[in-house]
Amino acid sequence: MLRNSPESGTRQFEPNGFEWIYMETSGRRYQRLCESMVRNQIEARGVNDPRVLAAMRNVPRHEFVNESLIDQAYSDHPLPIGEQQTISQPYIVALMTEALQLNPDDRVLEIGSGSGYQAAILAELAYRVYTIERNRTLYEKARQALEKLGYYNVVCRYGDGTLGWKEESPFDAIMVTAGAPDIPKPLVEQLGMGGRMVIPVGSSDSQMLVKLFRDEKGIHRMELGGCRFVKLIGQRGWRGE
Ligand code: SAH
Image 1 (tube, protein in one colour):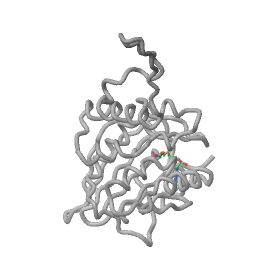
Image 2 (cartoon, rainbow, N blue to C red; image 1 turned 45 degrees about the horizontal axis):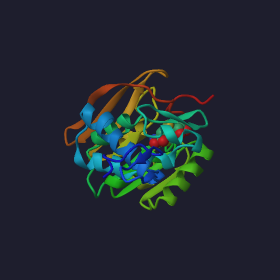
Image 3 (cartoon, rainbow, N blue to C red; image 1 turned 45 degrees about the vertical axis):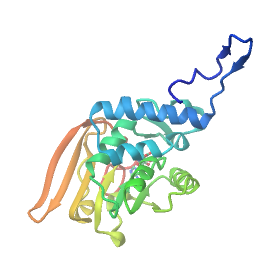
């Protein structure tokens, strides 16, 4: 049993004179860290959609971070992924995913592929994920990570996500994982009837997580709480440096 296993590397002495050392495999170790992440960081804070929790359990987050940070992959904070960008804190990933209320046949647009981790979570819950990244190095890395893990329902694109992906619109859900000064108009236009969007909106160092919902009466707006994301840079975002 996972829970009763001694800590990896500890020596065990038995009354009959036998001695052994319990060595946990790395796969099992990550599984244990992931389970504790889901329980203590996500469920405990009120995300309880069982499909979202299952997705958070299924995706190996350590496969999306740099070798040198692998031990922190399941920790309660964002992590650097290179190119001055970060992979979001697990709780934020779960909260934003839950807000999208995904159905298995939904087509989802993600802006800011970063490591590819959030795209993998979305891919567990939706029919197809379209993800756009403006940084060439991260775009290549994310694509490789997703391919290695067999997420063939994710389509990656290199470019400016503030313009959306017109040819593939309308989308059932849109998630923006970088902070915007305002909600980019093309994204609102590409949100289908009944569609949901989550996007951090505000200044460059603090934003409000905003949820939009489109129905027959129009667009409705809700605020989910404060957050802090890297900048959304592009024609309808912040100006690049
Ligand atoms: N969702 C990612 C984390 C994203 S960090 C993950 O799970 O790892 C934000 C990302 O948005 C960065 O990689 C940044 O390069 C990217 N980004 C910023 N502006 C963008 C734009 N206009 N279009 C596409 N990607 C953008």
